[in-house]
Length: 111
Length: 111
Picture 1 (cartoon, rainbow over the protein chains, first blue to last red):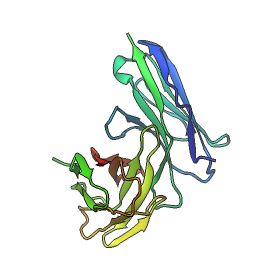
Picture 2: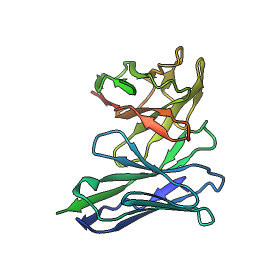
Picture 3: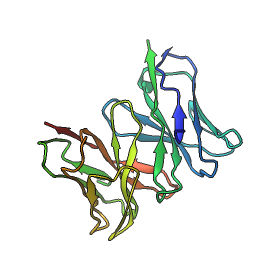
Picture 4: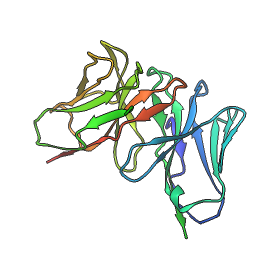
């Protein structure tokens, strides 16, 4: 079983739409959770950390369900500039705070 | 200007050659990591170092070697023993909340 699993998409949505991405992780002892954004042929960039109580940063809301080992990202009022691949990331308990990455979910926001 | 630099941006290797990828940081962080990314795949951990003069193998260390003689530098050598080295190589530095920040990456192609 993969450590972190995501729906690869692609998700094609019109500008202004709300879109949600989901992710599951296999290690119940994982402690740190993140969403990264990766543009084509670029390095991943931290979008936001995910906290147990849920957290929001502008149009982005992240949720964590430890019981179900499930993480979500909600993007409201999508912009063309949100088009990217979104990576669900969980810390790797066996490798000195290294991270386990999902393969990513592709989002295309269209005019 | 603070950050993480990687060089070169593009690298071409002939079969049987060893090549070294550079990663430098001036963020004064202890932990550094090397990942590789293949098309449509998640990042996979090659090596990591939590302190100078110490490093550990990640999930796919075979065919790679590293050194950590200075806090600022963590070079990766791709040896001829790595049978499929064509990939996007990313160096990362750990932040204080277990998040990681990436350099711009090196694209290695075997000719």
